[in-house]
Amino acid sequence: MEYTAIDYILYPDLLQDDILYVKKLDIINNVSDHYPIKAEINFEFSIGSNKLKSSKRDKIYCKVNWDKLDKDKYQESIEKGIDALKLDLNTTDGISDAFSNINNIIDSATKSVAPAHKAFRKRPKLKVMNENIDHAIKAKKQAHALWKFQGRPADPCNELVINKKQTTYELRKQCRNEIAQRRINDRKEIIQARKKSYTSKFDIQYLDTVDSGYEHIIKICTDEREHIPVAIKELDEAIHKLNRNISADIFGVTVGNLSISKRCKISNFQRKFDVKTAAGAGTGISLCLLGVKKASCQTTDNITAPDPSTLLSETLVRNASFAVVESTTAFLSQVTVSLVESCEQYTKALYILMKLMDYRLKVLGNGESEQKIADLIIEARASVNKLKSRNQELQLLYMSAYNLVNEASTAAYTAGSEFHSTVATSMIQSSEVHLSKFQRDLNDAEAEMRKMEANVILVESEYMEKKIKAHENRDVENDDLLNIETHNGETNSEDNFQHDGSFDSEKNENET
Image (cartoon, rainbow, N blue to C red; front, side, top):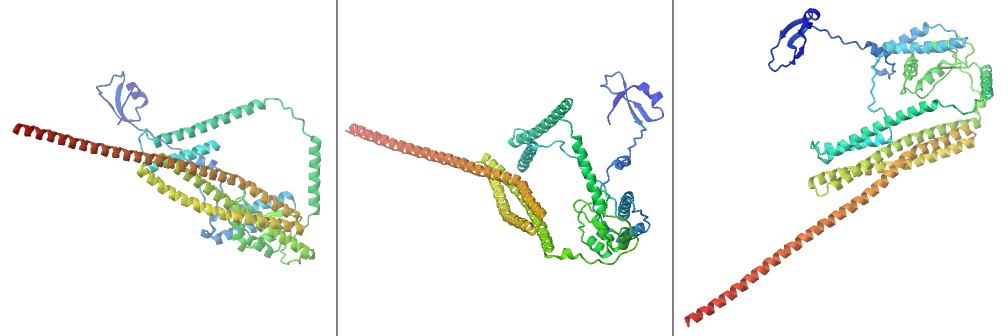
């Protein structure tokens, strides 16, 4: 337990009711003017509830799992809401209120059977982002991966530890620079906003002309619209064809709400709104009430005969060209997305391989590390070759889709549909523009890869030449040592022979 020195005079007046136990301590090394005491204080610490915070959060619509819900209860709730609905469709406000009421009925029925979802908010780690910060993040991740691969060395003098610290410093530096640059730009905008504007005045007369033309067009469309009845079978088929795998709209209504509730009394929808419905696509789906003049409370099950003018060969050919353009443009879009993903993966694999090759040059001569890096390079090359073949296949598929859309555009123009021909042409141009950036990055990566391979060949050849020369020098030194030893042996034998001969002559003279 930790102790602290406080004024003892605070106890009787302020803390008498809350102190459970108090004792004055005798600490030898205490040099303070205060009396150190040990006390137990009764204190209540209340943590505020998060209800207020949660109530301030924005409402988030999540996808409903219709396979695990009580569909009968959902249908019953919708039927009760529709039966109790009272509408006035003679005015524009009444139509808007009816639209909101139906969406509220569907939303409340969904909430009654679907569990509430908790909102998940992930705070961003970085408040700023640019190209330099992106490169710094990649460099930091690669340095951390190499440091982790080498067993997380703790030596501050280690090259990997130094590289990891430098990349972290560079990332923080880029973030601070970007924040400072944005602050400077904001100040410049504020300063420039104080200056007088020298632009000419807006053409008010032209604005009035545009507004009058807009009002005239709205009036023509309002006067010439016709009431189109809707049959139950047509409404049922339209709801059945809707795509369920899309998100909710601003009212919280999804396609699943309509498709699941189609087994309810669809005649209620048709009875309440005897209008033509249109299904929207994209991020949401709702009932769009178009061309309403008067509401009809009678159910119309009769199917009207088609207009003979819509069965002409020219009309049928034009409609067929519409379908061809839509299908080919959808195919081109999917192929473009797949090719973009393939280019990104292939580019990333090339940079990883180049990083491994560069690191291998740094560990030349270190047998264990060189072998580990060589194994990683083999694995990375296999991945690069696989991604390259996949990218080439998608390139061929993209050219086929490109030709299909081009031919469909020509066919639509020949059939008399200039609008769809223009749409197909713009689709081709947008796909080329979107794909050009990723292909440019891929070409740059391949060029850098070729330079890296040439550099690896040059460095390894120089290393092998140095190694061979060092080996040859060692062989020459060994030969010289052997020659010196042989020469020394022969010299010693000749000296011994001369010494023996002189000794024999002296011996003979003595004997004589």
